Length: 390
Image (cartoon, rainbow, N blue to C red):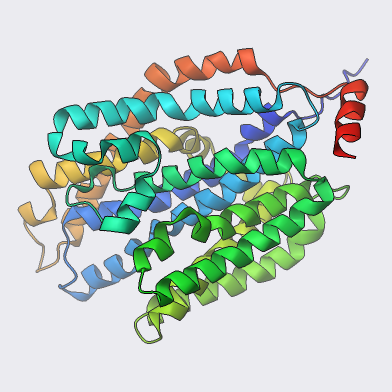
């Protein structure tokens, strides 16, 4: 007798190998960008150096892919569990177990070793550092500068579960559309008010990527899922890729308000949303699924959180206090070979440290998630929730 196939649970979707592959792509984009940024290779030099910098520095856009993916995963989990028991307790307990141990351990170690960073400690402890940066500018000691994105996501987690729980499902797409519109307006108005850092770092101006991911999670739970969007997603991804390349290459030729602070971020969010449609609906026989599920890429995706938290600190420390490309000989005036060597060594070191963090620290807390399992609601529980909604 053939065993009955078990329906996927929210825990399964959280570890979908296709989405682990997307995580892997996102963190590799960010890593390559920061390897170039902190490797020490300057903007001047022979054409190979200039081309390499021109094509790798913009890869920090992987942060936008993280936002879209986060909106998709978190909204999906919330929709799947909103009618079940212990909705808020399970969600927040699992988020705490996933995020807090490494985050706060990193803060404690950094503040211990670098006393100059303690003056902003309260902003880091409370996940408000994005507003601190927006108010006073980028820190002179930027070891934890990348934590602004973690603050944005944490603030999103504080509000979004309540909206998903209390609003009818049919209203959620309209809320996502309103969030996208609000983000566009917020970037426009803040930049127009000569507050460019707020226009880039404030949580509400980053809602378009998170909301697009949330909208796709809602569509994925419709009867036909994401399948009807596959063909439009291919065309949309091509258009957004071309538009992104144009915006990056012409951002100094048009008004910064138009290119840098408003539409580029939106185009990235839409393009990554289209890519996520293709990834999340990839069939077992497709080349895309095989590529996303490659063991090496899913392993990088598994370590993506620890790699994101750790890599920035390692790269800046290595560049400032150990070696970078300027301390290595050039080849025919080019620092590109030295940059590639720096990238290989530093990148491998970051991966090794993230694996150590995952297996020796994070996995011990992740194992505690078994006490906060998501489970499908009983018919009686569904009826009680529906009666409450009415």
